[in-house]
Image (cartoon, rainbow, N blue to C red):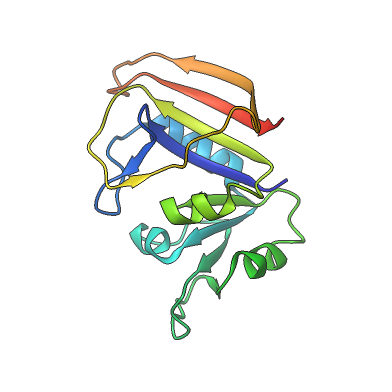
Length: 160
């Protein structure tokens, strides 16, 4: 099951200056729980935004730069190559950025979305979810609390 996973604001904001615009510890824990042991597919900028590679995951980096060769990731030059490289994994995750999500939207089978309740200044956005194509199958609300400056909702979509 090819799944896109993202945290977005109410206006589909993903981030600004190659970074998130909020800090939600429970969302980080959920991301780790879902993606550990799996292939994670991302663009070069997303990979380079990590302080270090994420442990216990196979990093597949989509890049246009034929000379790009990071130490801790496998570089591919197309979506098809990324999918082929992850074919042994029954649940690879697409983790961004904005252009990668847009390219995978027509072929992804599920979306794990954390909807952060707020409007944010951003320069990168998640594509619009077409509800004639996608069905919301699960929704779990989390209120703002001492660890989280924003309320948020975990949403799972599957192709309708």
